[in-house]
Length: 287
Image (cartoon, rainbow, N blue to C red; front, side, top):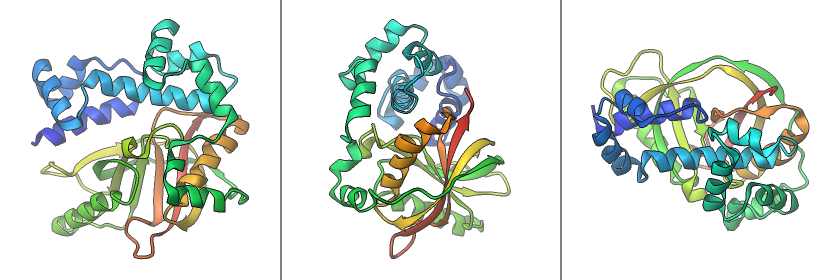
């Protein structure tokens, strides 16, 4: 089994519940390494130490909660994000974003200075879709899905390389490429596009015997709000921003810590005209 495959197992554990205790020894055991060797290999594969990676993911989740749940006390968001004290959370947050949690919340409510707007194509789509409303959502309990996947860093056309790689793997393995999913680990409203974490997935009906660049995971079941979205490349993120920044704060629901799921009917990264038809599934709860 490759280093990538073993580290993917650890990443899967991390993203199952980013707020849970995630000691390096437990992650090393999952990856079948000694703890010392695990630290070296994780940094080699991911580009960050395991502690840096977990902290960044927790702070991204906290940043989302501060933006979209404006009535929730900061200490409660800190606890839900895996921090044991308000002081440690505030210190880490300011180191990451150069703002205190309170300043971040205020800034988020006052302007549209979002990282994805630095991309001219997406900014043009944002302006074009500014007056367009969202489709009526459905609240749905999604089943779990067993999928093969390839992880990708960066949100842009480069994602198509991961999808082509997954398609080639399916052809080689004699597997169906019909049911395609994307996992959005990052919110581009607060994470630069080249740092956003995305996972290209295809549903499988039997286990993978030889794991390597392509690995397997289970997308967890749970309550989601589902929006049917359509458009061309560049128009998805502006629609997602409306869901996150406008629909969610007024909905009465809380965004959970598991990744948002996209179910593709038409995959923009695989279509010649870069058009998409998809269900965007946001994990939600009542607390």
